[in-house]
Image (cartoon, rainbow, N blue to C red; front, side, top):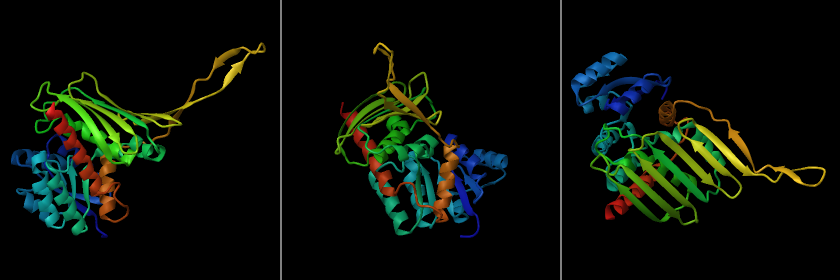
Length: 319
């Protein structure tokens, strides 16, 4: 492909607006237009961003090379399948679909038709997470906290599929071992779904991950801590910062032979290239379409992430 990749955005709600903002700035792509079930909203958005508002999903798909799907989860499979069957590349917001069967069908369709299917796990493109993949080798313990105040705009899923799924995805890609068993609890606070959840994942290689998520906490906290044999790693998603803590053995002695002080640990700050993760995600999607790079993860990883998320939900609903 020598021309710019033609992109359409389906759904212009909270997340869709961000996608439109980013898509129109890409150097190797062109925003062809948008679609929203609310035609008045679509017209306003199109006018604001100097693009076209299409009257149907099919019409938008027909005029593009690829689509970004930012609609409620229950529509991911229907629209994703429609685009893939039309030979279009797809970036769909997380979770990939409502069920594992739907997710597998989308991945199989993309593979069969040699199309790019990317799931919007935007944290994969956080500068600190990209660096983390170069540092973590054999994690023993991972502790993740993703806490935030309640946002009433999320109505169709609970905190596991809304927020925790990011950390499930990151943890699975770091540990690279099957989950042996898990234990999970959760509770409703202000919505019809679980608003607080906590899970412990036990992996076959012996690693343990403790993941907590809340959308009813009066402070925004997004951290990841990793224990390895030789280093303790702390990551802050919001600041895109990583610190490495290593044990030190340096003792400073007085002439009398007494220890004046002991250096307990050495802290290293890792240089992180900080950029807009959503922009990084879009650029990666376009580069994959142009065959300039390989996908960061394959479709099986997205299925595995969703599978673990549903195992967590099943465990929560048992209690």
